[in-house]
Image (cartoon, rainbow, N blue to C red; front, side, top):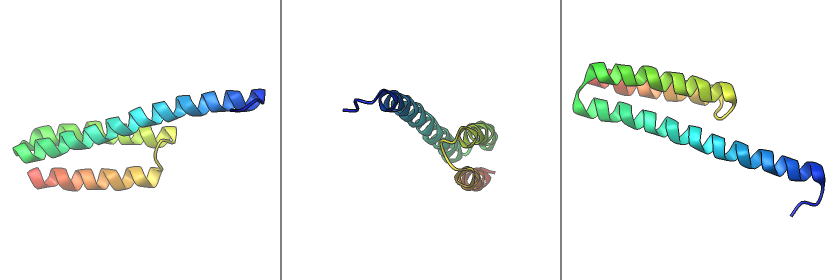
Length: 87
């Protein structure tokens, strides 16, 4: 256990960030699963709508530093390829 005041504060900040990042990552996985479900159902219009939501979440996560911007770009590419299969 840290006994230095600044380290105690840093530990609290790290814990808050860890919880926030975990929630955002989970949200990203859910968004991708929604696209997959729409593609599996054969609903191209719904798939495209879900892709747009997914893009927004990925861009937001990259901007906040939860994932790297190239990782966001790679995931967006994968999601769009997946959605194009429904069309």
